[in-house]
Length: 185
Image (tube, rainbow, N blue to C red; front, side):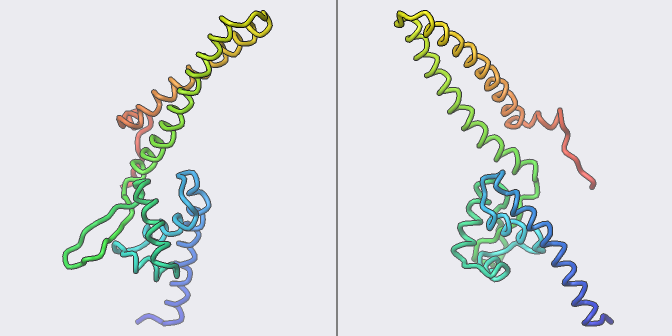
């Protein structure tokens, strides 16, 4: 038979331990382009024994259902949670995506691919402008500076081609041949 006082103390310690992790997730979730409140929501769903509805989340976090809906959408977009179905339950249920590697890979791919494409496009446009300037200017000093800038842009371009290769490692899953997933199961 358990003592209510001891159970209450241990339950409080369990909550404190969970909150420690949830707080850290909320502080660092910006790396995934997600708000701290959505990070706390993620932690709440992470520690839930069962999939949660928006109502469950709202009650657990003492926040509005609208806030939960916004937060869960950003977590779905980042592939950090998934919608699940249970017989007899009409409301949407959510649980944490079990594959943290998949979540990271999706966020990494989307963010870096987009930034890389934009930067590569800017490099190409800038190189075209510099080539035109080299042809049109009558000033040797300007021509030389433009040529130096072209060299710098070529180095930057090499970096972005390398980054495209890194992104492809994540897209194909070959990154895990180089750096295997860890499992203690």
